[in-house]
Structure formats: structure tokens, C-alpha cells
Length: 91
Image (tube, one colour):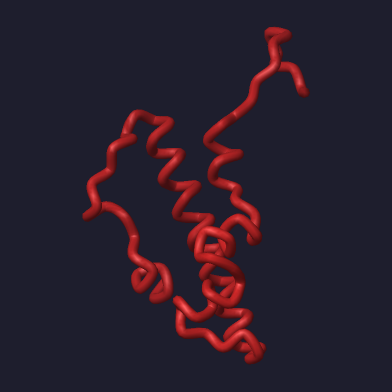
């Protein structure tokens, strides 16, 4: 593990928690097909596959923002501050 300037090792839990793999995100929906079904995407349509990738990236970005905010002390965000999938899809 890399060492800091003071010689100790560090491990960032916020970055590791926010960098979910595609597999982990699909698994949280019950699998790849369920993920696409939940977002009304057709897994055989190339455009929908690209849309699914964009949704996953948006979810990953939202997680990164959430955990960064929590690390700064803004941890308990109300539900009104959270993004919905519709808001993410609109960009």
C-alpha cells in the first residue's frame, strides 16, 4: 500500500465505496437483465445499451458526490437532496 509523506499508509473508504463496479450495480438490481428492465431499456438494442452505461456512470457520479459530502461532514442528507433516476437521466 502506498505511504503518505509522513510514512503511514492510508486507505480511503469513501473512494472505494463510491467506485462500484458495473457488476456490483447490476447485482443490486438483481442482475443485468433486471437493471435494463427497471430502466425500460432493451438489452438487445445498442442505443439502450449505451443509455444503460450512461445511467451506471451517473449513479457512480452521484455516489461519489454523496460520499464526498459525507466525508466533509454533510453525511445525513435528506431525501430532498438525493437525485432520482429521472433527474439523473435528464442530465
